[in-house]
Amino acid sequence: MSDETPPPEYGFDHLPEPLPSRAYATMAIVLRAGLFLSVALFVLGLVLFFVERPHETMTDLTASQLFLRFLDPRVLAAGLAHGDPTAILSLGMFTLVATPMARVLTGMFYFHDHHEKVMTGLTLTVLILLLVGSLVLGPYLASL
Image (cartoon, rainbow, N blue to C red):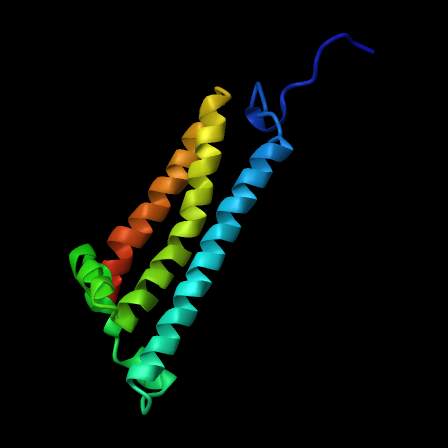
């Protein structure tokens, strides 16, 4: 038997500490709050939509691509100010998409506060990819 330490697994000299239960609890709260808020917005938007347009169906709602005009934040703000149901539904979708990003951001702050440079960099990379996919690729593909 030798006194040599085995080589580190996966090429890392130092594996990050597991997240404490407080960090998991914070991330769970972020996910639950985002989910509940988006569901509330969806319910409110759908009720208002079908009250204002009782003869339309869900197929009419999705086929008309009413949501594309709300990709512009100014148009979304104006629609929300006027109580437009499709603006409320759009905000519900944006909230649902933003919720995992908020969770990644929460994790990134945790790793940064605990000086975990590798994990901070990885979570920042994931956040950037999510933002590019949502804010650049999503609108571009929707416009095709």
